[in-house]
Amino acid sequence: METKLSERLNRLSPSATLAMSQRSGELKAQGIDIINMSVGEPDFNTPDHIKQAAIKAVEDNWSRYSPVPGYPGLRQAIVDKLKRENGLDYTPAQILCSNGAKQSVCNTIMALVNEGDEVIIPAPYWVSYPQMVLLADGKPVYIEAGIEQDFKITPEQLEAVITPKTRALILCSPSNPTGAVYSRKELEGLKNVLLKHERVIVIADEIYEHINYVGEHASMAQFPEIKDRVVIINGVSKAYAMTGWRIGFIAAPEWVVKGCNKLQGQYTSGPCSVSQKAAEVAFAGPQECVEEMRQAFERRKNLIVKLAKEIPGLEVNDPQGAFYLFPKCSSFFGKRDGDRVINTSSDLAMYLLEVGHVATVGGDAFGSPECFRMSYATSDENIIEALRRIKETLARLKQ
Image 1 (cartoon, rainbow, N blue to C red):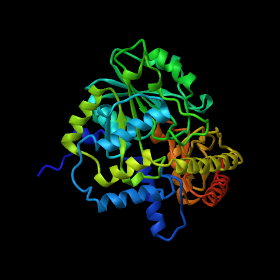
Image 2: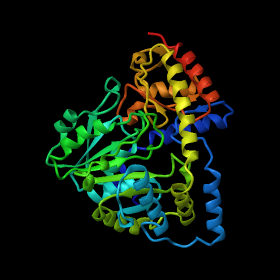
Image 3: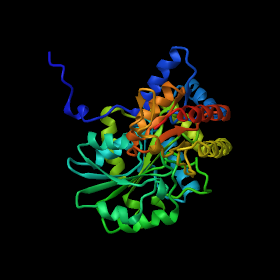
């Protein structure tokens, strides 16, 4: 029997965030007190009115296959949300719901990218973007945007990498892993470049839309002259603390939605029926819970930034959204603790886990090997203790 996996699969790398979470779990199983700051997941429970909608859906027997793009009621609730919150006009035919925003991104890439097509990915990036492009036989093209430019690309950088083979730009704002948020003015500069290159589609990952600290969310789709080339990715996981419910969506030109519908119809069909009914209420129901969670994240952000800036050797910016801090840690490279030498940010993350008992993720997997990621989607007490441990552990490293 031949036990060789496909070349397609062999091109992919394992998820670094999930790998670190697994190692953290192994140490916890040994009785070690680990503070987990590696996973991007709100620590809040799903709001009660959304849970009640799911219970009612079960009782009302919403237990059968849904249409592939999702129930009409959910798609209409998304249309209404986009109009109400973003000033954008879509129809239900321009909405497709999937098993989480992750599938929405992958659907879009698989539907648009041919072998050899280039997809521009600003670095730092979410770990799965390049892997999805590789899965589609595309070529990831990176633009490096370091901490000195607040992790945001410039129009000049974008113009410099566009070629006749460029098919898409993936833009995540607010950003995982950096928390960077593009303003409307910054997006306009990128839009002006893209207008000159009609083949390029913008995949706008806006899953952290409501976790921002700048007062408003700007979307590339808000520019009418480019809206028909923008695919919005969003969902319920972050804003409504519904990560396990697995509901994401795209809002896009109808030809893209039809393509993704064709693809999804062949390998997953519609997402969970009960989750869809819960998500419908999340979008259409009261929104006070979203603001309450946002305020908690902002308080935690202020706390972790303050504490991280007190750690010698770390370079720290002030994120404008999401729930991640992405400090620069390259000053520790080449330092050691006994026989243990820190050569990369992944080395540093593993050192912090095994010696400091705090789980973080090295920046190598995010395309920024000089940084590492901490999620502050945890309690104030955990943040205070984790940063105390990190400060104490890093102080052990010597030249």
